[in-house]
Structure formats: C-alpha cells, structure tokens
Amino acid sequence: MSQAKSLSQETFSKPFIVKGRKGAIAAMLLAHGSATHQAHPHLEALSGALNAQRIMTLRFNFEYRKAGRAFPSPMHDSVADFLIAAEYFGKSRINIPLFFGGHSYGGRVATHAAMAVQKASKLPRIKNRLKGMIGFSLPLHPRGKPHLERWSHLQENPLPLLIVSGDRDPMIQKEQASAFLKAHHAATMCWIPGADHAFKQTKSSIEHDGSAYLLAAVAARRWIDLLNLGDSTPPPMHA
Image (cartoon, rainbow, N blue to C red; front, side, top):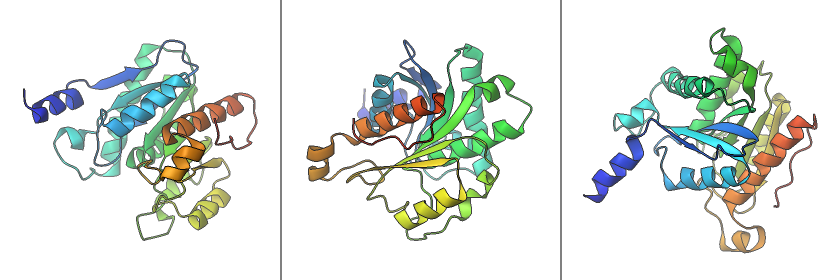
C-alpha cells in the first residue's frame, strides 16, 4: 500500500474521530485548520493533550477537504459541516459540558457555528449543553492585515470564548488582541511563550515552558474549571 493511499484512508475513512470519552469532564468539537484535516499530526497532538486533561474530543473533516481542495468553502458551508458534527454528538446523549473549538480556520468556524446554535431553534439539545468556545491559534486577522473586520458575528455573543495562541503568531498581533478583548468582554486570552501559529516553539521556550500542546490543553482545562466556578480570572499558562 502506498503512503499516499494509507494517508487518504486514515484521513477520510472515518467521518468522525472520537477520543478521550472515558472519565471526561467536558467535550470539545475540534475542527482542523484550513489546509489540514482531522488526522493531521498537529490536531492529533492537540487532541491527545486535551484528552490527558479529561477533555473528550470529536474531530471531523470539512467537506471541501474531502473533495481534495485546500482552500475553504464559503463560511456557511463550513458552518453546516460543523453543525453536522454537533448533531452527531447530540445523538450520543453524553451529558457533559460541550465546547465548540478548533485550530486556526477551524476556530473561526467554531465561533460562527456557536452563534448559529444560539440563534436557531434547531439542535436544542446542543444549545443546552454548549458552554463556550475555544480557538487555538485563532486568526484574529489575515497575515499582514491587522484589522478585526471578521468578528462582527460576535457582537451579541453570550458565550465565553478562550483564545490560546503563540506569542509569535503573525495572525494575532498583541495590539489587535487587546482591541478584540476590549470589544468582546466574554473573551479571555492566553499566550503560549515562543510558539508560532502552528505551535512550533523556539528551543529556549521548550526548555523553559514545556510543550505548547501541554500548555494549551492545561489552559483550556483550567478555563473550563473556572467557568464552572463562575470565575472569569484568566488561567495561568504554566502546568
């Protein structure tokens, strides 16, 4: 079997990849970035770190990736894909808090999907369980274009949002992050020292702070725990 064929089967043979269900205190629909897929090593590593923090993950592929395209479909199509995954989770009747999340583009879609659930009468089972959104390397703005024009859908957002990004990520400049937090009071920001958009770290940051995936997962777990306590204090970044 060729490596390409093996990758294709691993990537697209399953409609969903569910991991970490046993003992989970929360669940996350974890969407991939624009040019990756549900079984990409980056998403595998992030999913595994979340599972270790007792956060169950459900991964899926956007339809444009199944069709072999690297460039995303219109946002409403990707939102529809996300809601299909949400409906699948809803049928499982797993009674734990649910979070919509994703890496990069997947995180953007997660915020649109969460707003769709909040505004729609369908998926009531999901609406009742949905407690927040988590964007890993959430691209607040396009590379080299520091503006916040893509977030108007969150103006009346009632859900808490956690953003976990590397401090070397070119698509989330700190000035724009500060402006975003001022405009969206339900949002919390956590920076991973020395990490870029793909969570690749400098050697010194790995030696001093540890794995970016561990830091991201610990931040997510602590934020979830704080939500349950009714506390909005940003989670510390060190495990």
